[in-house]
Length: 258
Image (cartoon, rainbow, N blue to C red; front, side, top):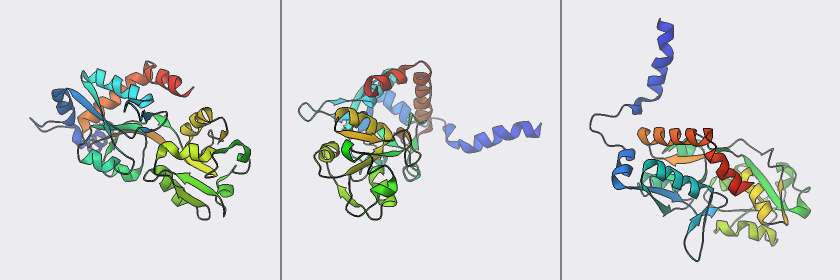
């Protein structure tokens, strides 16, 4: 009998926050009472979120997903601009309720926040001008004197570059929307980013080629960033589970990526 109860015991230890104190309000309660879901988006990471400079409107896979989540909550969607550098500080300051837009799961971010269940597997991969595809076939070949690796500062791409590259020159591009245009124009040699983005960018820029995105340099997963509020996490995870099982999420991926 004791052996049968042990799994339940460890489960209760793992999720102590599930039991809310009587009368305690969760972020989930606040969202429903407020009538709006505030979603933090950088607006500079296709296909997940992109901001139109003329209209200010946001579009992308996670914009559509955010709209679906708001509908499930029975509230309106409010997009809150954020940046990769301020993502965690904006979340902890309660400027938004959930961060979306192709956010990589990292242990450093996990110290301050929760993640939803993973929504997509995506390790780091390289993309270069097609004429240089064979030249930069490996991470070792990229990490050579004279190679310019373009990267937007503040996110996991820069963290990966600084951890993996010792001899290549890391060139910061403040506007993430410019990175692949600069690569195509020859202002750099390589960009290392999530493998899913390399697949999209080679479609948007025919002169660029993704370099074995099916064999990324490392293991990575994308998820939604959440405050430390278990009721909200449980709702988001359940909504995601249903969206995966009924094909809703797959349809969004096909629309924006395939």
